[in-house]
Image (tube, rainbow, N blue to C red; front, side):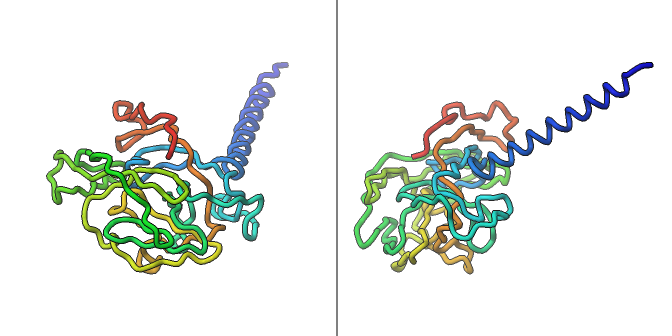
Amino acid sequence: MSDKPSTVMDGVIETVKTIVYALLIAGVVRTLFFQPFWIPSGSMKDTLLIGDFLFVNKMSYGYSRYSCPLALCPIEGRIFGSDPERGDVAVFRHPVNGQDFIKRIVGLPGETVQMRSGQLYINGALAPQTPDGDFIEINEPQGPVASTPICREGFQPRGATCTKTRTIETLPNGVQHSVLDAIDGRFDNTGVFTVPEGHYFFMGDNRDNSTDSRERPEFGGVGFVPADHLIGRADRVMFSSAGRSLFFAWTWRSDRFFKKIE
């Protein structure tokens, strides 16, 4: 009597078990350690480019309910928490619309933040900027949503050169990072923001093309971000593609593979 049906069934069961184990392991890793994140917009240029793929380190700030997919972790506040540092590039859950955003922490709890003539002031002191040439790209649809960049030259036809002024900004703790400026934007001058206790102030490095803490959530911005909405710190770009799909190998940016985020 043949045992072939039994052998086939055993193989199917083992395959199903392998898939289930793999999914469980992936779920644990994603929940406790690292979350994949694909950069969809140009708000963090040129630190992060559209099409950069990275893993967010969830262990960096401890865990909150937002550390789990769909915010399902039964956690009040944060556990195993540690405070973010100024200058960290971090992923957080938007306080209103529930989307995941990635920006740079510039303001800590209890501090004041203000923009004057496109320059950042923290607790009344200027975060100095040093000229660092131009950031140049082609004016064309970028990424899966086909967004187009803001250019210093104003309206540019498709395929033309698009330029932004680049400076190196030095934060009060000595962290230096690139900042882009293209136009006199409406958030180049703001009132004084006082960051509440237990909250953080985030800004994009591409200052004229960033939805961030400079605008309140009810008006389409981010506002102050509660500490328990932090998901993790972004430390390194793992992979990068300039095309509308990661499968377009001719658009891969090999110079950005494993690039440290500063």
